[in-house]
Structure formats: C-alpha cells, structure tokens
Amino acid sequence: MKIIKVKAKSIFTKTGLPGSDWTINQYVGCEHNCLYCYSGFMCRWKPYGKWGTWVEVKENAPELVKGNYVRGWVWMSSVSDPYQPIEKKLKLTRRVLENMNKRIKLTVQTKSDLILRDIDLFKEFKNIEIGLTINGFEGKIKKLFEPFSSTHKERVHALKILKKNKLRTYAFISPIIPELVNVKKCIKETKNFVDYYWFEILNLRASGEEFIKALKTKFPKSYKVMANSEKFSEFLEDLKDIIKKENIKSAGIEIHFPKWKTIKV
Ligand code: SF4
Image (cartoon, rainbow, N blue to C red; front, side):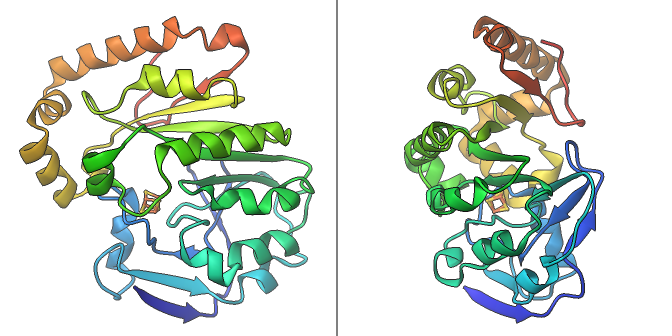
C-alpha cells in the first residue's frame, strides 16, 4: 500500500451529494478496495496508481478543522473510508473528531467496526449520525467485492453497539445487486439498531469496467437484470414489496434513496 503524506489547503468541500452540504476527506483513497467503488474516478487526478493501492493522508487535517465551523451537514467521507485499516495506526480520523467543533452536524459512514473505538467522541457531538454499509456479502463474494473491510457480522454488531450507546444510526444497504443481496435479511438483522435506512441500488455505470466484467462473467443472472430495462423494472417492483412488507415505516424508521434511483414505498 502506497501511503502519500500531504498538507492540504482546506478540509471541508461543498457538495451536492444527497443528505449533505459538505464533505470531509482526511484520507483520499481506500485500502478497503471494493471492486465496485464509485470513487475510482479519483485516479484521474491522483497519479499514484490503481484505486485501492494508495492512500493519501492529509496530515494537517486535525489542524485544519480546529476553529473551523460550517453550516449544514458534513459527510465523512466521500472518497475514502474514515476507518480503513491505516486509521488504527495513524488515528487521523480520531484527531480530526477531537478537534472538530462539536456543534457541526456530522454524518460518519464506514464499512469497518473500528468505528466503535471513537464512541466517546461521537457522544460529544450535538448532531451526529453513524452509518454502516450493510449488504450481507460473505465468503467468495465478499472476497471479490469487498476484500478488506469488516465482515457482515462485525458491521451488524457495530450498529448494535452504537445504538446501545444511544447514538443516531443508519444502515446504508448498498450496493443492492439482483440475486446477490438479500435485502429482506439485511433489514431483519438491523432494524432494531437503526433510525433510518438508505437503500442504494448498484449504480452500474459508476462501478467501473473491472466490476462490470466480473459481474458479467461470474454473475451473469445479476448482470442481465441490471442491463435489461424490463427486468430491472421488475426487480425494483420486487424490492419495493420487500421493503413494504418489513413494515419499516410503521416501526418509525425513515427510508431514503439516493437521487439517482428513488422508488416509492
Ligand atoms: S469502503 Fe467505500 S471508499 Fe473504500 S473502497 Fe469501499 S466503496 Fe470505496
């Protein structure tokens, strides 16, 4: 893993991403190296090699957040995972959180149970929500799609502990792939520990050539549904039914979809 240490000029970036006004990326690049990662486009601007083989570390991020207040929601992080393995050693995310104005409205999203380490800091924030990506990938699929992140069980457990600590939590059910993600099971296993859900259907276009090739060759049934508009519409209808049947709304749990693919439930 190539580690590139840099000094950044600024740390909060304006964004049009749903649910947030700003992003913060103390890291750029990600050791989790998910095959479908939508952030691979960053390689166009960062000449360090293939996505997943490098991490840029903004060493001065903790200093940059100090005394810096922004209005609106801040999303940590959009082109990295704040709790990727290197965080265990560097504690950069932890130092950013320590120095951050605790009135900032913050969303932290990860695929790692390392997030549990910072519960003490999360509790200091007035408005904070913590999300874990949940998709149930295990075994060979996990190895292929998300080789270096926490296991499904560890992520569900993390949500449970965060909720036990009275933090606002959500499950980011993503990427929803026909035949490969059991949304019903994901909901059942998490609904006692979350305040809301994001349901994000795989964005095939953003997932990159390597992923599309893998899906096509190893999971042709899934690919066919994604690539055929009629089949895809049927799949969305089924998904709608699954979500409805789980009575999420009546249990007081909110439901969100990213702008690119919203379905009415
Ligand atoms: S954890 Fe997120 S940022 Fe990291 S590789 Fe996976 S999808 Fe990309």
